[in-house]
Amino acid sequence: MTARSDSALEQELRRLFGRLRANLVGHDRGVLFGFLLCLVPVPPVALIGIAISAFNYKLWKDHKLDLGEGPAIKRALGIGLIVLGLSSAFWYYIIFATLDELPAALRLLREALEGLREDTRSILYWLLRVPGVHKIST
Image (tube, rainbow, N blue to C red; front, side):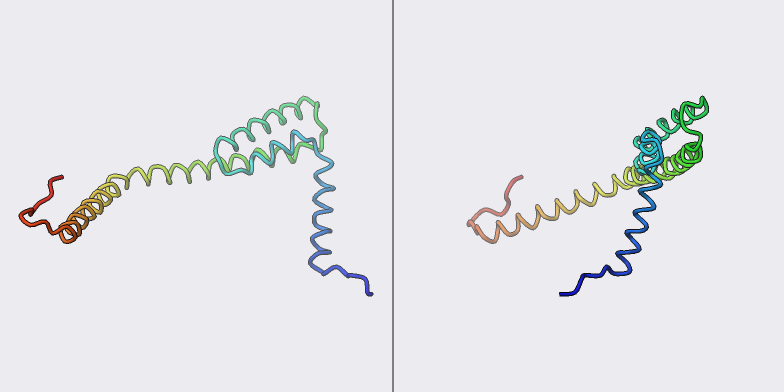
């Protein structure tokens, strides 16, 4: 039996994740948590991430966090503000574009249902064929 050798992709991914893990282990958990929340494109979550990062920034300025945490905190604040702005604009557009088109969509739905009602009525007339009945009241 020959020993199984890892593919080049697997080796490269293992090295990449090893470097990432080594980089993350050196940071404070609160800084990492705030940074990860800043990446979520849902405005309330990103806002919480920005608040945590702002609190971390104050702690860093007061020298209660390691001095090496400063760049990560600043990146988290910058990325969080960008994500918050873009995701807020996206959700604003989705919500208000939908509301602007809502009356037209409801009108189309009503017309489709009225057409379905007329078709159903015609099918019932044909199926029942009751002599002397020309109209079914609704």
